[in-house]
Image 1 (cartoon, rainbow, N blue to C red):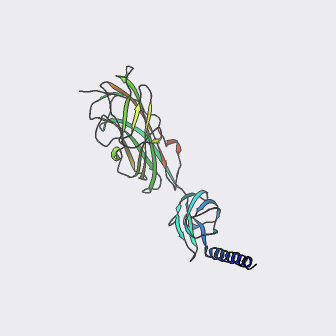
Image 2: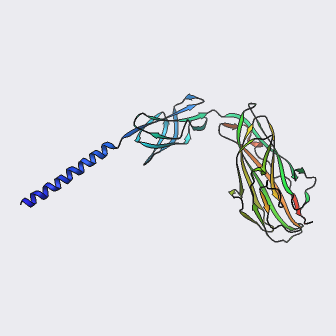
Image 3: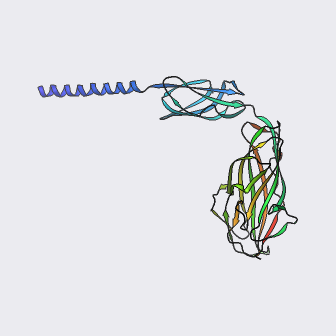
Length: 312
């Protein structure tokens, strides 16, 4: 009988201790407050906008501002999804913050009215070693390179700086020995040298990525160029351009092999190898800007240039 009594007491003691631990644990799970607000052209704005709050153990979604959320304390990130006025630019100060119980943490979605600009790009000329070509059939020798020039312009508020994203395509067609049919495949080596894409007058470049059919490639990658199968070699570049400046963009597409400032080079060219080249380019304005005339954002495919490699 006494054994049964002690067993019951032991069970009750365990339950009391467990409840005490549970209550203590619950009490220590402090809650914090997040405020999500917005500004439009520097002034407070309220209305419908979709965003996410990503926390240490859970997420929350928002559909309007201003809105308060009660969350677990810790590191939280605010991510814009869609909606709101004008153009979303950024989260003011920081998109990730430490949320503590001492005071509410505020995320501010920043929107602006897009500035009106007109970005344009035009094919200018094919060049060899920097000099304009005079024929659509040319010979190249070891050390030569093929480049191209485009004219670019952004109109709008004078001296404003506009971020632009440019994509340029080079279609390479291996048409064999002297273009007369038949020929082995060749290998294109990726260089993607930083100086292969230049702007005159100079502009700040933040990114340059060589691609094959839109897929990123890295220096030292190799691209197969079979006989009579066109391949698209591309490059994407981000710049900051000054409004009202007239720019000339030069792309050093292919060296045989050549100076280091090229995008691509054939590793096994043979005497008489002929490549038929054509290119086109597009320009896009970045966040905070509205392109008023998208019809001049891209060129047509430019006239083909046929290049025959000659060993001295």
